[in-house]
Image (spheres, rainbow, N blue to C red):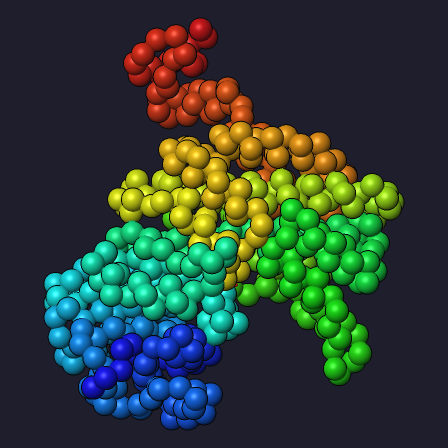
Length: 467
Ligand code: 6PG
């Protein structure tokens, strides 16, 4: 009856997070129905005070009260099944922390259901993959603030550190932790798509060899683009396929899979009426990649694009354009968080969120410090583009961004996420958009009314009557 924290789900993520907790001196215990996972946990953690049980009752009885149980099981119905199995075994005041990539509306529902039973429920985003779980992830816990106090020490201990500061903070009430993690993943999709478009530009636009591509990404990672995703991209271009001796990346099918978090980000952004076009285009391009047969047959019918002539200055423009597009993608994600915070009363601290994303997570990047500083200087910023430092950096990269996108489009190289990032920026700094015409059309065909520039009120015109 003496283990401090429990973990249900001893797969890669759960086991590694539990070992991380044990490393930091916490006594922990795990539960998994799969005996092999328990054996692995005991083997990998033999130097520590930990235990594992295949029987859920034994597991529950091994925990100190109030019990603190982390779930790391696949998102969806399994989470409900596990919770339902736990409910009769738990006492009031116990804490369940769901650390999967659960849909935030599911987290809200579970929170309400468990609150009624006196059980604290946390939706906690965890990012950083296997390596992160084992040695320091970024953690995004949302739920009851008082219950967080009981978790704070262990979460801070296991999380990644940047400048000695833990990459975890109390995110807010209800499902806010999972909402923030979902948005993290939306940004992750956007940046991955931007990197894919850069790759396409280098490979089919500039005719770079794999070696040159590797060097390009490695160089990018030395400057202001320094980030986990750029770093692993450079590494990918070093790995050979054992079977064929080719570069492994060349042997991988060009159809991107997904588990839903990016799509949810776009869906919710539509519901909240927040434009996040770079993330939307990343989701759309994953879907387009799945249409392999259609793509091949249309390539046969219509032919593919012609390569751009290599221009030695293109490298630097591409780096700048990527920087610009990346900033735009982060800005869209932060704007979504700001609106969600209002709508769902999450009371999010955007500076703190940027701060805990600086380490441990998939979208960690040097640039996150700029976002952190922007929202620290002014928590009521309204939009990242309102920060002077960000404005300066965007202005400095704008010319290169237009050059790259124009060049790409002129040569039939698709850069939808780059273009979305740029047009988002261009439109956001347009005081008067062409939407007056849209309103006129709506009123014309459906009497949907319009507002006037020179007078308050709602107006309708009989458009067919001449003037
Ligand atoms: C992370 C990742 C992680 C997962 C992605 C993959 O932060 O550690 O985001 O949660 O790898 O969700 O998502 P897709 O399978 O949808 O690409």
